[in-house]
Image 1 (spheres, helix red, strand yellow):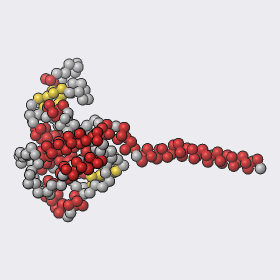
Image 2 (cartoon, rainbow, N blue to C red; image 1 turned 60 degrees about the horizontal axis):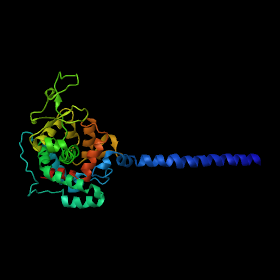
Image 3 (spheres, rainbow, N blue to C red; image 1 turned 180 degrees about the vertical axis):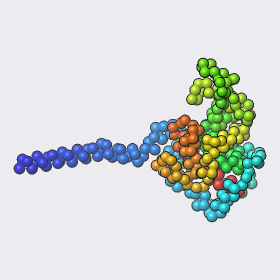
Image 4 (cartoon, rainbow, N blue to C red; image 1 turned 90 degrees about the vertical axis):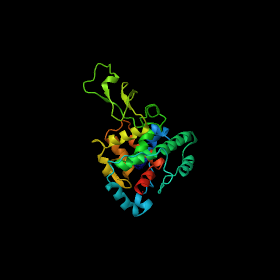
Length: 307
């Protein structure tokens, strides 16, 4: 009888131990894995941006939003050779644009409901930036096929919606650096003479980034900055994305993004930019993706395709 009671006590103890382990370790571990991206976002500088805290699950492709006509329009867009065209985009949106999918007023109301009151000033700054530079981004997209959504999101993030020092004082909206000349002095006394800038730039300005002596290109206006950004993404390191991730589709990516291994084209672009070395920030792909989704910048891409 005592042996049975001992056995029962042993099994009871084991069962209790398993139950306690489940409560203390397994369940918290499950929730951490399940909501890792949201937890990481809340603890990182993503939480400081006026954006959603994770990817949306309701993305629609161009064909779903616009219909069958989108496919033929998309084919025409990518087949058109506009590389030699010179664009002079207006500073403000075209008053007679035929296909206007992005609407500031509607979006502003939605964001007022979904984002905290403390972020509303930044929301307005982001929307102002989009309105001010969308035509330049669309002109670059027409000529280079680089999605305007990606260009605008990078400008919003890199230049803090035009409020950062480089964007405001140097017209550098994308954090593009001057390059060190071959044979530069390695004794720590690096000067402006050790740097070259692109022909679109008019000089370099010192700002601390990876190093205290980093120099960034200075442009006469934002238009040259956007043009320089396009030229950079057309270079050997980044141009593979232009036809790999076409507008309006969903693509597999090398690493999951917010638990998704198949994502909209703009998210694939964001991951590709990070993997190709555009930025050192750990969550760069997440930040660019969330900016595009929060401000529905993909709708601006659709406007150009459907012209």
